[in-house]
Image 1 (tube, rainbow, N blue to C red):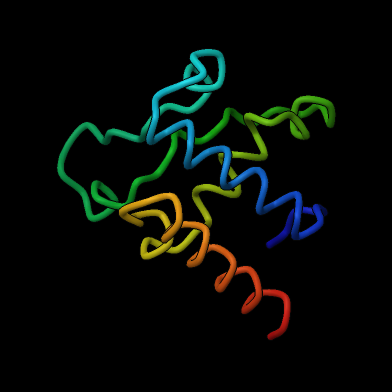
Image 2 (cartoon, rainbow, N blue to C red):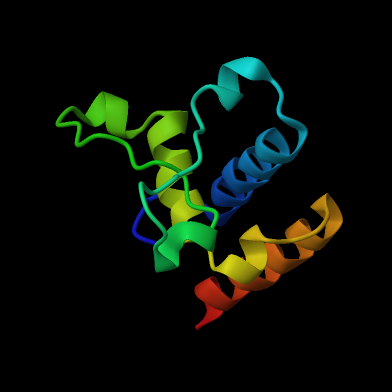
Length: 103
């Protein structure tokens, strides 16, 4: 991952995103995370992507939860994003992050 975050911080961001998307709350975070819906059928239609943030030139905005969550969430492999439950998601996420750190 290209972000300068600790693995624990990445894990916390991604579990928060998963929880918000699955349980549809809290509303203030749900409003920040919108699903990517292409105008026509594309190969990326079934990849559970979030809408990309606009190109922001300030460092302050690029370090917000919203911008970081979108970058991290869209870089996850599909087998992690499409987990059927929170416990399966956490197990797959930990395996993926360990593989990223130790390879």
